[in-house]
Amino acid sequence: MGHFRQPPYGVTGPIGHQIENSTPSGWRKPTAGLATAEQLAQAGERISVPKSKAFVAVKRVGAHIGLKASDMMLLDTLGAFTQAQDWEEGRRPIIWASNAYLMEQNGFSLSALKRHARRLAEAGIIAFKDSPNGKRWGRRDADCVILEAYGFDLSPMSARVEEFEDLYAQLQAERELCLRLKRKITVARRMIRARIEAALSGALNGPWGQLMGLFEDLLGRLPRRHEASERVIVKSGV
Image (tube, rainbow, N blue to C red; front, side, top):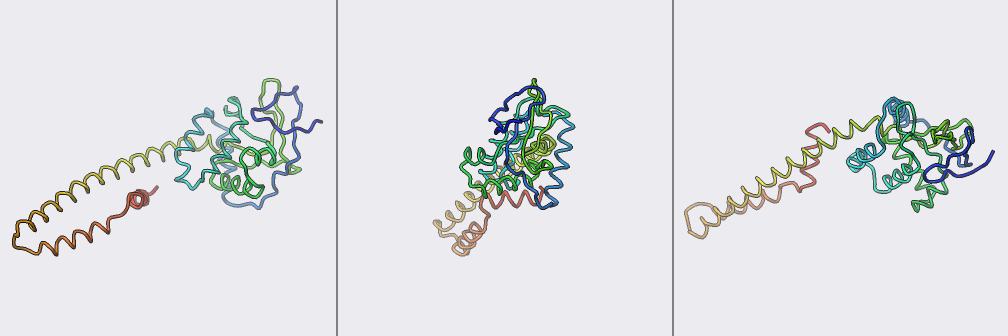
């Protein structure tokens, strides 16, 4: 039995040939997040989703669901190992790349690699499929179909495409609402300021100086763009 690292796009060997590496896959402490990720992986196996569609859906909402740039970089590296047929119904896009290769490609330390992989799993983007001996390995047949594999499972992405597309549409609607509100606030602010300044310059009777001070105070209380966005998201129940 030969011992090899899985190349970036998957090497095809003879039928039944096993491609293995000696990287331990874990023996992780179970958590609710990891259990959910496995359930999502099982659901993802039952549907067929193009790889590009799955990745676009995740990337559009990645920051919103708490993923960092380095998490997405690792996800891209893992995705490069998969092939189109891996995303078909009844199959799982599982990657058995070694830690050494992933560390080299992303510039991660081992602890950083584990941290980013864990965050992806806890977020329900990937799942860990561990082998009985705790090592990542896999084999493809002559048609490059995965026969058996243990490692990083991207099946949860397939299960969540519709969810992420709906979330993205909601975020887009929220952003458009914020832009409309911002434009209305800008128009109202300019109109109010112009009228108060006209009253001051025309020496009209009234507490215009006091009103200008109150107006400036109100403007200072307006939430910044990102703060307003977050409030609308929470209010809408995202």
